[in-house]
Amino acid sequence: MVQHSEIELSECSDCPIRHRAVCARCEEDELDLLESIKYYRSYSAGQTMIWAGDRMDFVASVVVGVATLSQTMEDGRTQMVGLLLPSDFIGRPGREIAPYNVTAVSDVTVCCFRKRPFENLLVTTPHIGQRLLEMALDELDAAREWMLLLGRKTAREKIASLIAIIARRDAELKDALPEGRLSVTLPLTREAMADYLGLTLETVSRQISALKREGIIELEGKRRVIIPNLPVLMEQTGDDSDGGPIV
Amino acid sequence: MVQHSEIELSECSDCPIRHRAVCARCEEDELDLLESIKYYRSYSAGQTMIWAGDRMDFVASVVVGVATLSQTMEDGRTQMVGLLLPSDFIGRPGREIAPYNVTAVSDVTVCCFRKRPFENLLVTTPHIGQRLLEMALDELDAAREWMLLLGRKTAREKIASLIAIIARRDAELKDALPEGRLSVTLPLTREAMADYLGLTLETVSRQISALKREGIIELEGKRRVIIPNLPVLMEQTGDDSDGGPIV
DNA sequence: CGCAGAATTGATACATCTCAAGCTGGGTGG
DNA sequence: CCACCCAGCTTGAGATGTATCAATTCTGCG
Image: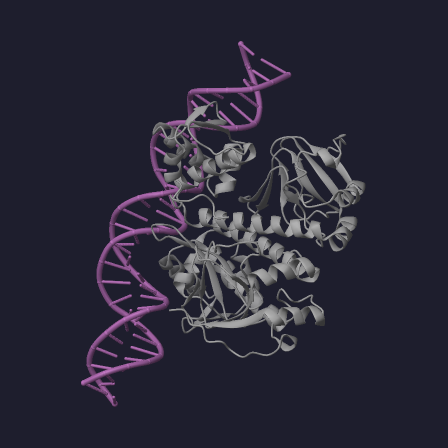
């Protein structure tokens, strides 16, 4: 079931996530230590990478692709609790059992470290622990933003927020300020968006249609969204108008 | 507005949160360093300790009492995003501006560290960073559990979950397994519970009444809840029946 | 006692879910 | 090359859970 095709990727020194992942702060010699315990793994779109309850003998960084973290209740209701993009970290030092499902949304390649050696490095190599702390705190902030969305926003605000989040992230990747007419690709199906937002897929579809009808977004196919005017979209998110994210 | 009554508390070595807070892993000599930059601050019930947008020149640990972390939208909708109990950490190294409101629910005493010196200790004293990482990851797990609650649970499940969470935590403090007839005190008003759960206070009140009517809980006054049979309550939470928390 | 904040309860409105029926676009096999 | 199929998506109609608005009723306390 699980596809294990090992992929030969570049060395750490010219890895695409070298400066954002858990290894970002490492010096050359520390990088060598990581290099010696790392290996790549790939999954194809739709595959479940890890099942909640599985024993985990590794931790990993997403190198390429998009994956999701999700929880499922007995009756099938599911809630996404994390959206994993390149450089994001999977797993937790000191934990045996995976608490969430991890699913590949697109084809995904991850850089794995065997857990035990990684835990040792964590003690001996402060730069790794420092970076991991920074990343954990960033995720905690994101989770709290997400809690406001889930608990208090309307369906329309949720959709607008999601599109805005994706647009902002795209811009971040290009290091360009988002302005004028932008075009972003939704990496998620309607159902995955629903799981992200705590809605049903029908409501997601209806709200997207409504935003389109009102000219706030345009669609090119099902997955590509054009935002003629970002500030207008931002007004629909319910967030403070004045502000970029507080850093 | 803010009450600054300094309180003379014990030394670190016999501090009530010595073994759970950010200092838990510290050796005696490391503790001395913390001791030299710490000071206490107290707030009375209902007081706002920190406003979102405030400049933060310290980080802190809750020593006594309960506080909340919350976000408010322009039109007044508010969502609680953190419940801070003794030993929980406030603030983030490397951050200037507070992103959330912090409010004292009961009278609260915190142990503060000036931010700059604390950040230096973080680099020179790995035990602090390690513990902080552990705590951040625990909070992240709690946030993700909370996201499932906000996104997918019904009002009744939310209330049952909240009572169960509080019951479990009380038991943890006493290091006793919860069994038989338990009695717990809700540290929150109905409105605060609503902000925690993403509901209105009327819905909270109705659901509590419903659980009472059905004999799943009993009330002693408004704040004290008696749970005649914990497993029966747990069935109402929507969570997996089999399981304690995955550690 | 009497007041104020907290909580309960009721009646109604409304947003979102649920169930059900089509639509669309891209791939496949005849 | 077309017909078909299927997953993903859209749209509709009606049900339902929670919010909203509005009285009361508690409870603790000066």
